[in-house]
View 1 (cartoon, helix red, strand yellow):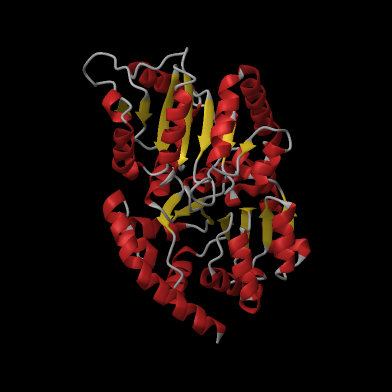
View 2 (tube, rainbow, N blue to C red):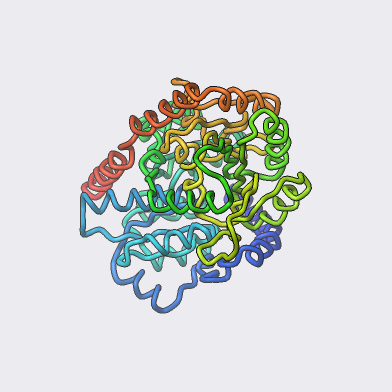
Length: 438
């Protein structure tokens, strides 16, 4: 009965969300490529590679999870070089990143929709040695059918958001069955472990490892130099104070522009760099900047082949993808978005890597353990509202020693927390070896 209800609801939800998905496909591009993977239909070349040997299947969704998965694959291969992998993604952005970074011996596919007939077809084709899911990916059909075939299922870098926890608790009878089909949970925090235990997971199957996202933060000195060149072309130099609003979502750019207008009177050399989370929002953000009246430039106006004299603008709109951390490296103060007018938060580890002072809003639900690591040593400032953001920015801009302290502490957190991925890879291989021997 439970399976009938789940499959019915999943089918209805899938059909309802499909128009939005198709619109996103059209806007972002990339989704059309290999779309049939989602239904378990592969090109002859991919199908042949999937069938030639058994592989460990690793799945990741967001860009951050893709980097974690790639690092995890590298760590496992460093221990057992003969291993081969399948990496699956959900988004086209993640797929593009994986295409550029995945070892050619491995196979890249899109994750299948969680219909039972699709899942059975995919497992028949792939027959993986194990299924490794990153963070909070709970797909009942694929977990259930993998378990029926004695394929170990594990979650790495696991976390359980409050909303997921409440939902699973509401449907406890169903999700207790699914969660107990999972061989091992390698989670980020004690809070995640406590939630899983409360949902009925056997505590011996849960290991608290910390977050693997510290391991994937890497310096990009070439990209940093390029970002500095771009800023110079915009007329921003080393004597300027630069606020960067990174991974901003709707509403946050307007807030930053309003605060910038107030602070500019106090700090004449203050500049603002806005990096929307999704580059396709650039036109919307540009309209917001234009209404502010401040002179501005777009990142794409300042490419190597751009013509014309050096500009002198107050605001730079980064309307490209993949350059955020390079502009973080050049900033005086950083606000990390999706935390003030939206919920969930974004990754603060990249700006911390560059030892920069960081401000976030109150809504960091997806990064609770990371924020906790930083707040313990005053390495991040978390504000409650717009007024708090303005005060925090003013406080940091007015005192270089405070900026340096906050940045130094942020950098030390990143260095102290590295090593989770290698420990997780070793533990997963031990669990797989034990499963084979039983």
